[in-house]
Image (cartoon, rainbow, N blue to C red; front, side, top):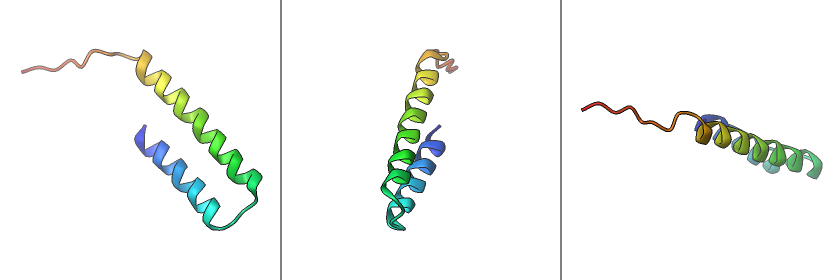
Length: 54
């Protein structure tokens, strides 16, 4: 999950660095924001048990 988020943010940062159009950067930012919400919803509603064994 973290890899997808950081990869998307890196892609957004690269788009900003290359000075692509503002619409592309904003589109990438919104896609990443939606992806973060979906991944967090999946993570939170998934199994909350840690199933640790000592």
